[in-house]
Image: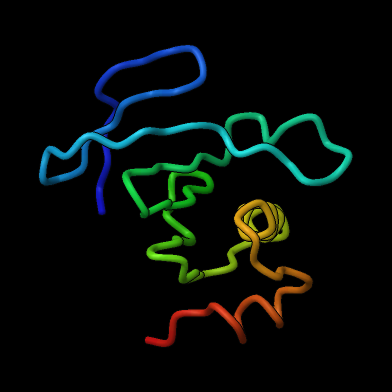
Length: 106
């Protein structure tokens, strides 16, 4: 899905997808000792769908309680995905485990 910024707010933004549906967007918070991901990881949400965007790339989603991970590009993107999954109640221990449990097979 392609998204564009529709309206800005301090912590929550409205974005629209290619079908002009409005989604909420917020910055992902780290689960470790880091203060933030410095604007590099965002969650875009509408209803029961959450999409994790890391460095302007959609890398994971949760829909109807089911997680999907599309790709692990880097150590930082993996940290984003681990935080996203753990904050939503999913097991996320290692890259291997994440891709085995939630990886999308093409």
